[in-house]
Image 1 (cartoon, rainbow, N blue to C red):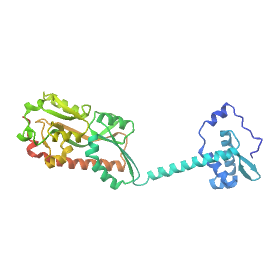
Image 2: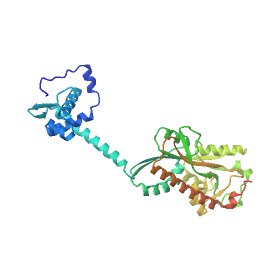
Image 3: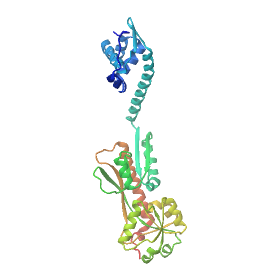
Image 4: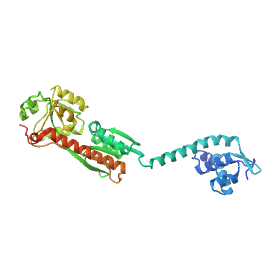
Length: 335
C-alpha cells in the first residue's frame, strides 16, 4: 500500500498545508495504527474499514509532507518522522480528552462559573452574605467578583466579562435589561456629638456651611448628591472625598465631617449608637438597585438563585434600615 518510492514534493501548495491545523480524526487513526501496527486491528478498534484507515493515513502523510510508516508484510512500523509525530499526537489527543472531560463536568449539577460585577460598596456590604448562602447550594461553582462603578459595569456586561452586574439603575441600553431588586434612601450620617444630632434636627441654613466627607466625586452616587442639592438651591462648599466607605465612617465618628450615605452601609454603627442618621429633607434622595444582564440571555438555575438571594438579603437590609431610622426620622424635615 505504501512504499519507499512514494515521495511528496514540497511545492508551494504543500508548504501551505504544513501550516494548516492537523485533522484530529487522522491523528487518532495514526496513533491507533502506531499502537496496533495493523490496519485491520486499527480499523476494528475505530469501527472503520481497512481502506478508510489507509485513506486517512495517506491524507495525513500528504498533509505533513513525509512518510510516517514503513510496511513489512501485513505489519507497519513507524519511520523516524512517524516516531516524532507520535510524541506530539499523544499529547494532543490527551489534551483533547482532558478538555472533553472538563466540559463534561461543567454540565453536571453544581458545576460552573458565575462572574459578578458590583460596586465596591455592594462587594463589601451585600455580596458576602449572598455568596455565603449561594455556596451552600452551588459549592463547586467558580465565582469571580469585579468591582466597578455603574457606567463601567455596563461595559463589562456588554463585553462579556461579567454575567450579572449588581448596580444602581443605569441609563437605558437596548441590549441590556435591568431587573429591580430594592430601593434605598440617602441620609445625613454624623457623630452623636454633632450639633444636629444633639438638637435632634437638621438646620437647613447650616447645610452649605458643614464639612462633608463624601465618596469619590467620579462615582454615580456623588453625582446624585450634587444634583440633589443643586435642585434644593444649596451648594456643599467644603468636602473631603474618599474611595472607601470604611474610611468615611471612621472620620465621621471622629466628628470631622458629615457624610451622605445609605443607612445599610452603617448598620452596625447605627445599632451601636456610634453614628446617627438624619433625613436630607422633605424631598427624599432615593436610588434603585438591581441586576443588569443581556436582554436576550436566559438565566440558568445558579444565576436565578443568586438574584433571589440578592433580593432576600436586600429586603432584610431595608427592613433593618427602617428600624434604625425610626418612624420619627422618616417624617422629619430638614429645617
